[in-house]
Amino acid sequence: MSNIFEILDRKGRKVILSQEDWKHIVKHKGIEQHIEDIKTAILNPTIARPHMHDSNKENFYLYFKETKRYLLVSVKYLNNEGEVKTSFITRKIMRK
Image 1: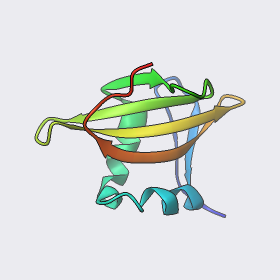
Image 2: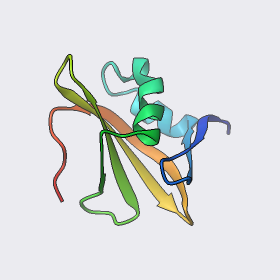
Image 3: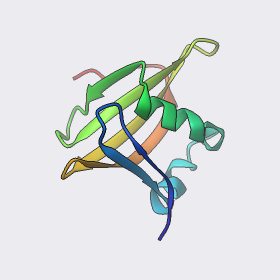
Image 4: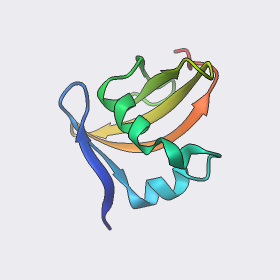
């Protein structure tokens, strides 16, 4: 199965977005128009935080000033390589 994209994150780790994960992500209303923003969040996030419940995941947030919302991109890392698991628009940053 091919990938939607493969990039390096801000720490130089390879991150992919698979077709399978993209099918899950586009179930979130309006997210399909944010593919480039997902890449931007991984490369240059407004905020990056460890995931609350999974030490192998990191959450990247990209702030949209015009809507006062964040794009959240959750990446799971194994062996120093990541895979985008979900992405959606949210009002809040998840606290640890």
